[in-house]
Length: 490
Image 1 (tube, one colour):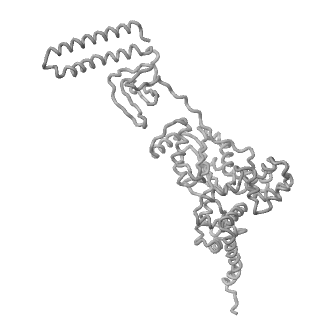
Image 2: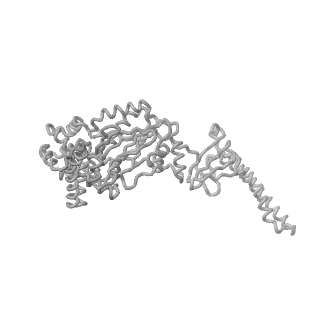
Image 3: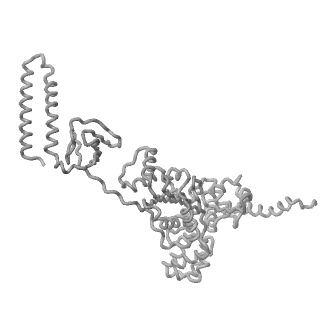
């Protein structure tokens, strides 16, 4: 702390400087040859004399006890709207970040040795040195749903893959199949393998505005540096900072609801980290091991129904079949019966038996469990012609091959069918590695497509598609017979 003697010394020296300066001015006025530069010379003399005084005043008046600053870092950061860093032994070098985050550096010879607890340069005031408390390790992945049921085989195989060094795992399938729920269960089981955190990023791939890679990277950076961390302006700088943040860490990233390879590939982290990706869309990535999820088994579907609404009882098997073993519809039916005590399981099974209204009845439990709304998210993203082909596929009551689809849906080269397959709106099963496979729609997806055909195409479009379907399959046996060369000439 400054002493009384220090104050007296400063006052005496200041008065002496003023008197000396006045004497210099009088002398200069006596010599006309120097009059043109009088104030310049006076100002120079004043500056040369007052500089050491400023240093003296700064060191003596504002210095803490010398013992208080021993052992402090040679590089200090002080925040108050701007950042000031005193480096190199805390002697006179100032590096300042402006509002855009650009570095402004320059020599400040009049500062001297910086030891003060608070000081002022110009009109910018800097507060005492404070270090932000380190953020806790981020554990942002939500807990898995309490009603998660089944998938034991999938869980075992995927965990075995992690044990063998897999780092990028993709869970794919139609909307409502349970991709995110399975990913949350996996993350919970793998938690001990990732001591540096688990991060959850919704990439919004099925929405109108998917998250950009740069925005996803910013979420990861802020998970470690706080929500107010300022991001660089360019995407390249954000990417560099993203890689630096994850370098050397063992972190799990859950990238939920991904749209495409282009969205995910820039987010692949460095060695040591692992990635879980969920998506309705099928795409490839270097090192990606993908798992295509199927509906639940009949036994798991029954277990899920009874766990939520035990009063379903003997109706569980029939109800599971009407729900087509899809987790979203199974939960919708079970929660509706658990919450609507005046609706009997038998009555609800009867209502669901009507295909024309089944999806509507299954959506009564709430928007979060509405399969029709879930399917609509994918449908709205389809190009016009692909959406038309999807509607026409509702005429296939069972599986079909590409040739039948091309003829009935008028889809040359089944290009749009392949697009629907990539978006998990159509399923495909290959009979052998070399042979051609067969396509089919999930039962509830077929009902959804039929509803869109009737709503958007009308009765005429449906009748035309059914007519082409009937003609194709009525002609097919004759065509096959002719190919065998056994048709007799009449």
